[in-house]
Amino acid sequence: MSDTIYFTQEGLQKLKDELHQLKSVERKKITLQIAEARDKGDLSENAEYDAAKEAQGLLEAKIAQLQSNLINARLVDETKIDTSKVLILSTVKLRNKKTKAEMKYTLVAENEADFKTGKISISSPIGKGLLGKKLGEIAVIKVPNGELELEIVKITRE
Image 1 (cartoon, rainbow, N blue to C red):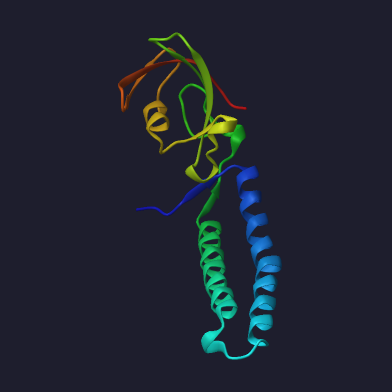
Image 2: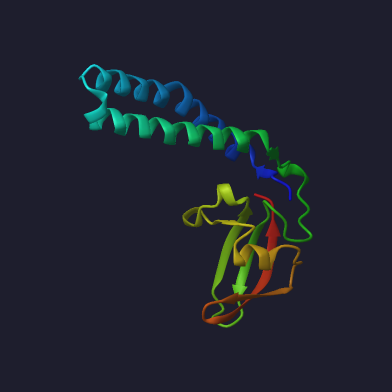
């Protein structure tokens, strides 16, 4: 199984910025918290010290995860996106066949999904159902209420 994680330029920059913030700012804060707690005396009964050490462990785990993501990151060239079918980074205008409601989503990697801004993951049920579909095709997606039929109205690269 591939550990490759696909990013847009914006998503990759956010990852790098977060990693920099954690390593350069948050690490220093926790180091200071540990030092202050250590100065307060007996470490065996020092709740502040225990909490700071636990926070340090969580921070280091988060840094390790982000570094792993960065190593496995692949930048998607948005200029080479094929708009003849739905792929990652395609912006798709859809029409619900039952309600006639129209919606627009951009398919992104899981780590960049943000439903509020119309970015859905390619690994979500809707994302999986749309991948590979062409203009005019109908994607039938299983949802808790049954099936959702979405017609592909437009495929663009935004």
